[in-house]
Length: 210
Image 1 (cartoon, helix red, strand yellow):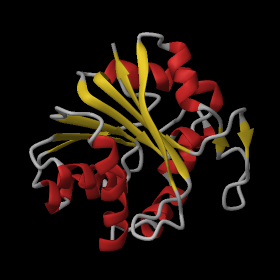
Image 2 (image 1 turned 120 degrees about the vertical axis):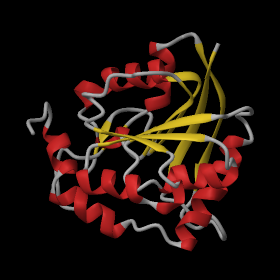
Image 3 (image 1 turned 90 degrees about the vertical axis):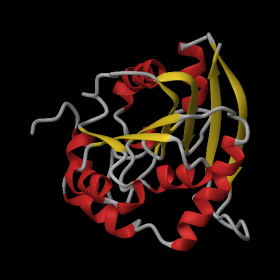
Image 4 (image 1 turned 60 degrees about the vertical axis):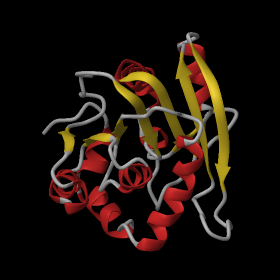
């Protein structure tokens, strides 16, 4: 399959497969993510559906569904092995929509109470960010949750020996500038030294459509 950017090809292939192996869902890692989403869900009442952009094998969706058992889940995932794992995972009991495609190629088919993206915008080609923001906006019926590495100005950093694969910036701020009918509900930081719920030093932002 041909892709628009080198980043898409990177994540759909061998490197994306290796990422799955490095980030298997364990009891400890799931507990940490549940701790994070308990804070976020507490500020977003009434969630009945969520779609995650770049879900990988679904640890974030598992955490959310653990907290809100009846929530409907959907995932966009470019890597074939990860998408297959999502479809076959007994945790979801077959009750998950999986769109096996690039985020850049995804055409929003309906709105979900929350559109979520976590640790993915940092790997998107910066020239395509406005496109991704638009898809997040049109996939959301009420909330948008962005969890990424924050930097006040755009910056590129090396990623596991690769160049052009990880970018930090104020993603939420750019989204709010692009969509002034959205407001910031809450934000927070997940620290790698947290005693019970360690993260990877990412910042979360919960936005709401007015």
